[in-house]
Amino acid sequence: MSLLFPLDDNGNPVPVLRFVSRGTQKLVVTSVSVRNPEPLPEDVELVTLIATGSCRFEVGDAGVTADPATSPFLYPGQYVDVPLAPEERYVAFVADGPDCLAYVIARR
Image (cartoon, rainbow, N blue to C red; front, side, top):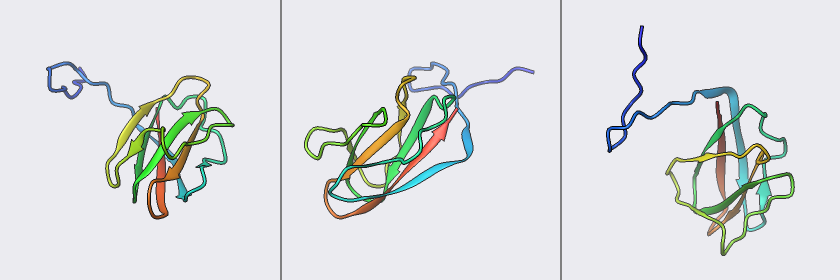
């Protein structure tokens, strides 16, 4: 049996990573940078991020912080897939407006 991947706009196959069972972390995002308290498992290759409000994020090691001026912007309600390097086990967020919730969804 063959497995057919979905195709992108250019007709190229897109491999799909599955969601990790119970692999979602919810963070309260405020004007002070916050990151997931536990590292993502080593076999997580990508995270899907979504937030209920405007915020900024960074991926990195245990010391990562999000900068309110220069970190990538995450629009509320939009899913963003972020591939992780082996040393990137944490995601930090900082609010770019009112406090909100952010979700880090692990994929492998």
